[in-house]
Length: 295
Image 1 (cartoon, rainbow, N blue to C red):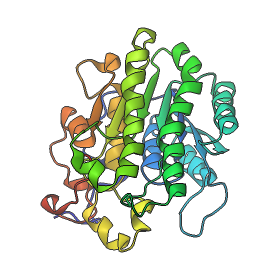
Image 2 (image 1 turned 45 degrees about the vertical axis):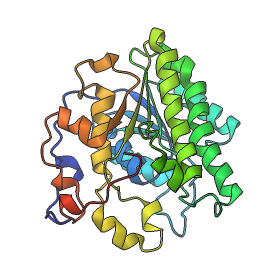
Image 3 (image 1 turned 60 degrees about the vertical axis):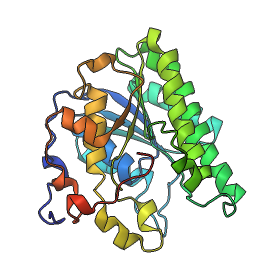
């Protein structure tokens, strides 16, 4: 068992990077906390430019961090940051973020669709406002941010869209357990599938990444019993390392040409030589970690 006290700190994980994001400009939805912030900080250690589009401009009673505090952490880690308060559901906010990224850093190399809403209610119980929220943030937000960034991505010498969404597993188990959420997450994955094919000729890579186990996030901690649940989770650093490997092409033979893939964090890191995932755990033994859904 690996405790949180003897786990690798974020700057000394078992992942050994073969590539760098130095000087690359990343536009990310969300990123004030959790997995998005971990990905941003990993990129910042390379010297990347990170544009954060997130709603949290003021401190929230139940959520740690704002887009401004996240930007401060990015710069402290060695990157350059541009914090933007905005909602991925709002066309004008997204257009403004794309324009600001191009104006401030001269272009966009990477789009990370990180913003997502979750509600695991069954069909009888789900509130339609929550249904609309998931569709608007997860599906429409992913499509919109990707769409508006396309002109800039085509101008990059290595444009890439990375979406945090699961493999398209049509086993009815998942839709039968939480249909509304499954539809929203699979909508994100369909965006990956379609854009990867559509953008092949443009040299823009499009991939998805998903965790094999539960990841410690504010959304999980705010659930009933969440503080106990996350003890059987991994920290977000595993997703940060996996995202870094995908974005630098370190995890696959095809490297910069790899597109249209639905990666898992373990798959990606194993391809880079990581054999021991225990350092990413928050306390539970590997055989007691809670698997994530859709796999």
